[in-house]
Length: 510
Image (tube, rainbow, N blue to C red; front, side):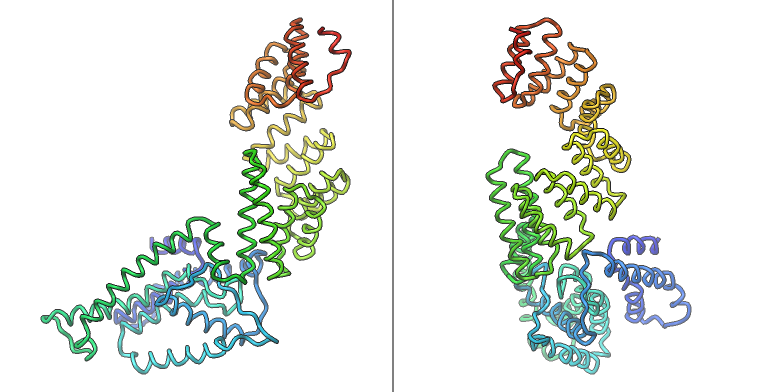
């Protein structure tokens, strides 16, 4: 059972690979003798740790999002030493906390002075613990517990954007809290005359002060934790906090921009276009700041392209998407962005070239076929769009938007029975209901089932009465039923909404 739980832990977070080493120091603390038996009982844990450790390193080095930076081995020692001291410092002085701590800027290849001092301070700390406290199991165990658990977070291999990640240090801090807890208990015991110890003159004289200090710190840190939780309320507050404390971190500007872009899209859907434009302008400013701080940040250029695309500035979008591809040729969203931008600019052939390139890079990505199907639909190439939409349904049946699009294509090629099946699927899924009713009404009209056509068109128009085409189709259905008054009324409403009604048709109903 323990091994199974350990496996689940490894699948959750690679940092769990340190467990076998922790088991060894627990043996040390409990005075268990090291033997082949004690080693053998840990062997399954060791094998799992080595396996998942290799997988984690490989994943970090191959994952495009996990930015692996080349640096000298010596510099990585400086980063790791600085990180170790920072984790200890942040425990006692948790100020200016951040989810990202940027790597230092080098001047002529030289790191800031504190990075060169850090290894010597770490050595001094180890020497002090060894010579002063090596016979104190509480301190040795706590220090080793902290060190072994924090080791995977130290940047011996420079990965990602942050030199330290204190949000992952809570397990490691158990070791330091173990030491502090023992200090607190010594002070408590010295306050109790019956359990008074003689370990130190400090505890004999200042036990009350030590206990009071711990209690005051507990209150202060509890309040600070509450305040910190508010920073993590949502992604927007989090990245604004990073910008406030560390304004030179490019990823914070880019991530905040991505949030604004997502929120803008939601506001566009909710017909709040003015606020959406404000958000998109903010995102552009943030992305531009990110590219200034980190000119090679492909994600920032990609977000710039997305913001310009949503603003309808397709030429600007293409420029930034092309910059993205120059930095990261496998960024599919950039290929898609260029394709869609060119489609809206009327450059249909170019649009297909770029979406086909994206598909060649990721042939199992259903979203790409969905996009190409949309491009074919815009070009009225419905017979080519249909196979792509069907691929989407096979690969990703949860893509609800594809059912309506495919049904519309079937309507266009007069496969009305197939269209009705898909429109019923849309209604079953409660997806784009008004479009489904109108599309179904059009299909029923094509099948000359005029009464059912009118019923479905009625339902669609009741949900959205701003589209002239459903009124015109309903007008034609009424005419087929010889209800010229209703046909005329709908024809005039379609005309009022901007549709040009053929004169010959008006003559039939007047």
